[in-house]
Image (tube, rainbow, N blue to C red; front, side):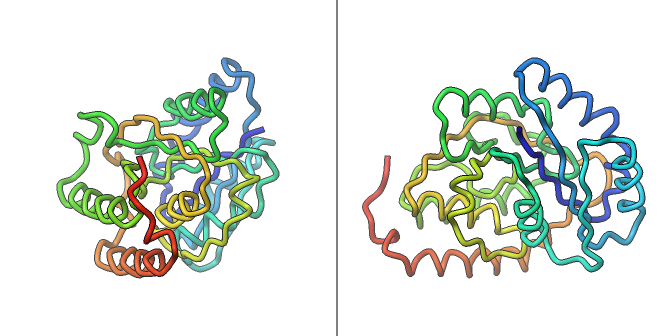
Length: 244
């Protein structure tokens, strides 16, 4: 069993796509790979019709669970709620806007089947041409954050910030996750490296959002990531030599 965890905040137009662009893709992957999936959606205080629409889907599908936060609390809080609810051995986290496409989930599953790492992380930096649709400002922010984490962690991991990942629940439960916002993805991967867990990256394309607006507010997220880096810098791991 694999649980797919998707946080939602004002994503009504993207929820409308799931019947054509998400569920049929996952059903095909399930048949091809012999894997059973379920879905955990966390509505994080949406002010539009997101909750209404995802609840309507859940009423028709036995494999969909919806969690609801009355007020917006942040991606980190939403993901942690999804982690707590999941009962599967493996978790996959994804954006609500499908900028990382469900068609790339087999890359995560195949990497896990080969080597059984603790985390398989999708990276648009592993190959050239995988971020051509990304807006310049978001690209600059992503490049800057990932560069700083690589230097801090003394590890050549190419990308720490994307949400598109597969986690082994056994190891995810062993780390304490503090983040409440977008920096949660960097925090998890950093703490995996600090703990010595095995991480494997696979190349995936990051696409342009088709509907709605990005929820990333760059200035607060820069501050949040700097705070997280400061915590990492205080650990003994920071003083280790560069890892290959």
